[in-house]
Image (tube, rainbow, N blue to C red; front, side, top):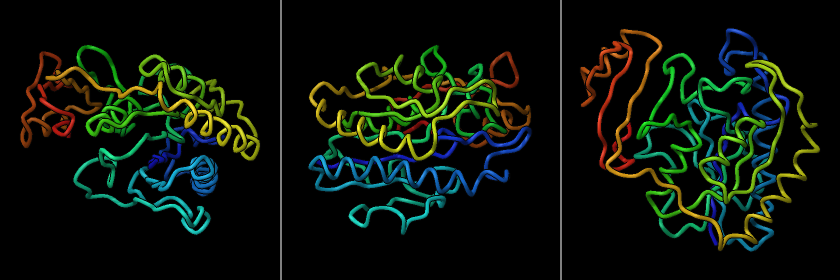
Length: 260
């Protein structure tokens, strides 16, 4: 068995950022980095203890250089940085499953902690085949290109609910309950580690019922930008077309590899 653990930072325990700031520029970023490392490690160790022959931890928040790598179990491999050919660098058809740790709800989610889709400063929403989709669903479909299922998600309550709507077979771990974009009641950041490990082991034991998530292809993708000039620029260098709403662009893709 081989697994990949994708790690974002907004969805981990006790992270809420600060109003009007991106997490990366807030005074919570150092804690978020440490907690994301702890949560990723708890899952990675549980997978290894469950018989995995290889676990790759993918550091995917922002520029992809966030985790404290020496604090991870030395048995793991680490995917990091940017400029890779596709999301899920190193993932192949031979993997048994992937886990999404520290993820967050999609943009426009009421009371979702730090809810956004890829860039809170750039996108209002991303829609695929008529339904809004967030990072969890898009990354799940990216893994689905290789026939690899998502087996576990850890996020705030709204994020877990969102993931469950799209992928009802997965194991979920609720790290906190949001009461706004920058507020929550969180589980203790150390207590949540045991729950992550326990559910990762459950996910491996239930691997036979895990399904591959895909969007129906060809897919119609619509993006609403937050700034008019961003929508204009998208149509200059890519096969996007403007809609009647000047903030919205649209295109049809034949595979998730064409998403970006």
